[in-house]
Length: 480
Image (cartoon, rainbow, N blue to C red):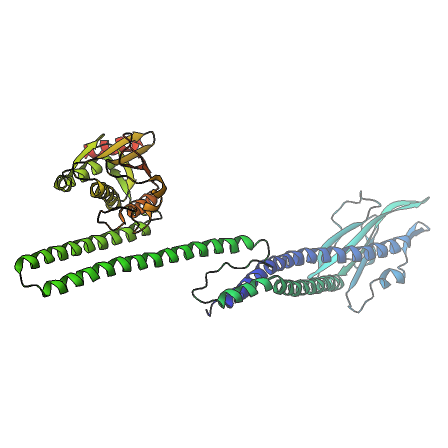
């Protein structure tokens, strides 16, 4: 019982894992995308500053008396002032490639001057540092001078990286807070959602070992109700099985106790006898009781084995049912002759196969023949018959005894039940065993009235093994 309280907690943990792991994966993917977006945003912002600075410088490039003059305005470099002291570099190159002002070794843009009027943004290495640059080719229009000058402004990456990190960190903080809030809401929601299941757990854990009443599914989520209904159905089957076992034990105990009481009475009576002939008769009666009790115990064991074989088993095999029935019928000839009963076999005596347990099918045929011979009067007849009916093989055991009224035909399959008015000694287990064996093999057993109108016809129908399988096995056996 100690593991029960942990089950809902484990379920809650699994739900949290299933929900939080995708959120964490989403956070990782979103962090990568946010990092790239932060870099792009910072680059865009600082590229605009670079472009503004380039245009401010380009506006101050003029031609005076046939010479190019450059007046660098303070505002062009003031745009980059911040708490992070990045370095600013600029350069103005004349039409002949000579540096008019700025840093002479500043790397030029990769594009040709044909990109006139369009800004150029590029990265370069300058004295071992990564440099972001903006460049602009400006056409000079003057009556005495024609040409193009190149204006470049570059900055180091400190400010861009700082802005990218700030954008990224702010986004991650917001997303982290959202995930924490989502986890909290999920935890609270699961506590509320799992509350009916926790009550269900407590109600089941508090039951006694003999309480098999149905579980109440009121208040349980609709997704869980099919599970509760399946548990109730399983519990109902267990309850029926337990009740049947108890009835079986009670009936068996009654049968054994009755026979032991009679045997004890016979023994006590025999101890008071002095005449050998009378004592011999008492011992014969006692021997008959012992034989009946032994037969009862054997039938009880077979019945228990048949009930335990209700599900699929691995020890089933393809059997020549016709040959098995024919052989068992021959074994009962001696018992039939002792009662002056004509025992016959009709139908094919081989090549009619079914799949089943050889021992249980043998008990099935033996119980049907024993039941027929036991209840058929002296001078009567019993016939075992094998017939093929499409995909089915039918075993029929027909007798001309007293038969069973139609109103009693269902009850004779009950354990220890014997039809009213029967004066034949028996345990009342033969047909009960036959029905359980039929259930274990998926067979159909039914009680009918013979065509003659007298006696009883018991028919057992089992599915036949396909002929192709039998032919293949016969061919393999002949080859071996």
